[in-house]
Image 1 (cartoon, helix red, strand yellow):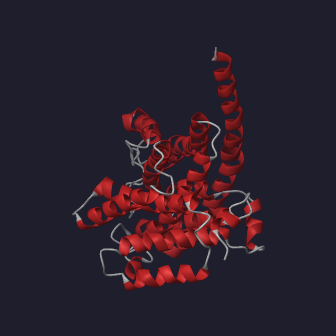
Image 2 (tube, rainbow, N blue to C red):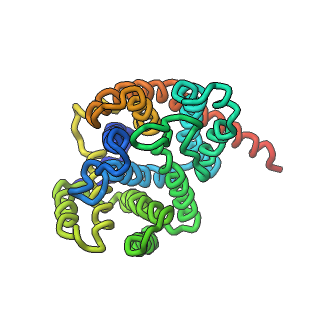
Image 3 (cartoon, rainbow, N blue to C red):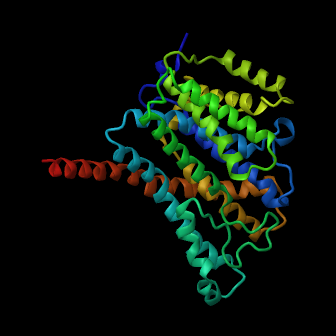
Length: 354
């Protein structure tokens, strides 16, 4: 029997590819409402009750839960952990927001440049979206006639949930709730919150947060119990079968999240030497995720009669190019420099000690 701990060594895994496929799935899923209108049913929804985009985001959160928990446990200091998270999210986000305001906006706004740059919403777009909590979806006069609405980058809504999960796992670890004897209680509380929000009407922020926090916690659990969690194709199919059986019950959201989370981790750790060649290329998934929506919106603005598949075929290569540039020019250098900053912080602390 092979366990997670047996494969969780070094970087010899498939997670860069799994994340990239998930990010591409979000682009694919968004093509339907962006090309045909908000009411359009996205892929997988009829079959599973979840959009393909939601399914892919669930995979993201499960993988993130595993590696963020590992990162916190192996941290040098709290500041090192925080810097690593900031370096992973913010540099690329700042660049895409700047390009959105100062390149995409002027190119696609129906207003004059004077009107565009004199509108206060042009100048609040960057700081509000950097806050992650007070999101601004529109820019003046941009994409106002697009069939999917005028949101510039609808994918960014998950970032505040992601950062919140970082804080929650750090808090849980500091409170020692991530001990093997206590973490099951955390999972039970989260599962009950998902069930409660599923039964309540609406829910909004709380519903989406609980739905994504649960797979993140399942990923955390896979790391905490890595020495006893097996990597088994039979378990993948067993969880998928259970999800099918429980499709019409209140427990479906839980088993759906569990099946997806385990499948994502199994795919990440299973050994396929040919596939692992991709791991040498880099992690382009974050760039793919944050650039896909505005690229698709720009594409449909230029070619308004595109079908969803045509939109995917035209927007994917552009998004891939931008994600490659983002990784090599922005994300990778930022991750490298955060070690230098963290070392300076530790040095100053030692120098300040009596």
